[in-house]
Image 1 (cartoon, one colour):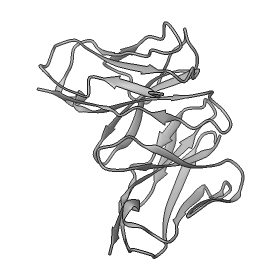
Image 2 (cartoon, chains in turn green, blue):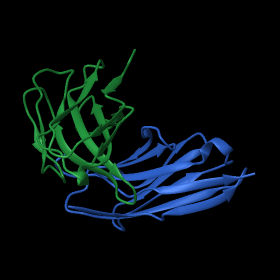
Image 3 (cartoon, helix red, strand yellow):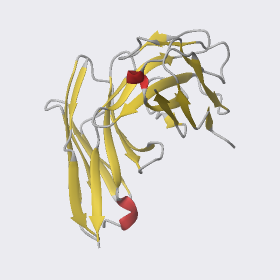
Length: 114
Length: 109
C-alpha cells in the first residue's frame, strides 16, 4: 500500500518556468490538500479539494492552481514560478472533512526557484 | 482566520515528561490536532480533541479547553526518538486546518 506519493522528490527551477507537482493517493480518500512549509511559518494551506470535481482556496493560493479530475490525483501547478515559491510542498488527504478525520501526508517535494 | 501560538523550542532529558502548550484564536472551532514531524519527513498524526478534557494514547496525551482556547500535548517517558517537531493544528468551521509554527523538542541523554 503506497498511501500518498508525490513527484518529484526535489526540483530546482528557473524563475518564470511552469511546474506541476504531482500527488496521488490510493486510499480512496475524498479530501485532498496542498500545503507549503517554510522555516518559522509552519504549514500553510494553498488549495484544497473536499471531493473530486471541487476545489477551494486556502490561506496562500496566489500563484498556484489545482485540479481534481478524479479521486486519486491532485496536481498543483505553478504557472510562472518566482523565488518566493521556494519551499517544501506537502500533499495530504483525509477520508472526509469533519469528525475524527486525520490528514495523511505525502513525503513532500522540495522546490527551489532561482 | 486562526492565530495559533506554541513555543519554538523545548529541551528535556530522556525519561522525563514534557508539556507543549498551544493557544489559539479561531473564528469557528471544529477540532484540534497534534502532529509529529521528524526532520526531513512528513507530519504524522498523534491526537485529536474536539471536546474538553484529556485524551490519552500510550505515552502521549492531549488536553483541550475550548473556553480558554488552549491545548497541550504531554509526552511521558521521553525517548531519544521523540526528538522532533510537534505541530498544533486547529480545524475551522469550513474543515480547513491551520497549523502553528511547531515546537522543536530535543531529548538529551
